[in-house]
Length: 442
Image (cartoon, rainbow, N blue to C red; front, side, top):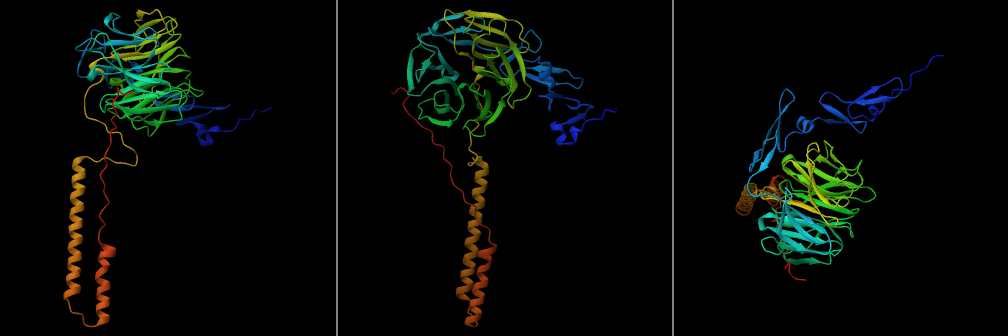
């Protein structure tokens, strides 16, 4: 009995493979060309040597022999270890929210006893380094407070209330905007730091749990932990939504940007792990897995070469190497389960050229371009007026031979104006209105 070969699955839509499809005696398989790897059985992704070796804290340049060279951004200097970057200036601080207080510790675990605020519940947090201000939203209170970290003790001042259930905060320090997510309404809202009249920009979310912004690229990131958990991205105005992670994700509770490497990290409480992707959702990697201190993840922060997290199960704040999970440390033990975690340092919020969030229907032109277009419009208008004046002079002062000839000439003299003259484009002034409300008003 002769066994016949089954059908060639690669003959139909390339077997669903994005690149190479290999027909086998029984079934088929997808393959990738050199320099790419196979993901999810049928998709190929380019291999980034820098992320593959994962040795550099910040800048990485691939070499022809397959290696990589490391460097640091301005404000950092190379550390003693390979690829390490250490921040210059003040020591970075970790801000931690618990059901007893909001406290500050250094990244080495030393407590700042004069930097604390008594609370009755944990809450979401975000900071504005330029004004040394902490924004804090106590859990299930529907309010947002601001706290000047220059005073002692810290004293909260009400900014907004009646907001539903605020689950996360993020500060855009370039455009001076405050973003917050609301689990009750499934939305993301934005308002000005110095007095918001809030406006919702994203709705229909399934239990939003975390927010982050990258104002230089004009990007907003968030996590949802509903029936279909995911991590998504949009513009700062909430437009152009893109899903970055939607598979092999259980309960994302916190996200943090590693801006120098253009990576996004997330803490998955269901998977008891920390993973990362680039800002386009590629080059996914699980960097930390539970070792008994990640069973109830709640907060996450990335700075220099470390990942910091808070865990309710072990009631601790810990850190590990962001590349491979080595160098585990317990920085702090708490008497109650810790909540949100934020790292603050001037280099995490540098100043620079603003990226203006734009709607697809509105284009904000550079000043030079706008001036050139305006000059062109003025020139075309002057040319049109000149042609009209010339036509009027010819009609009024040239004596017609007969009434019939005058009518013909009059019709023909208008044709260039009706059909041949260029039309001046319509322009308008786009004005961005910033809302202002006294944040101290109840």
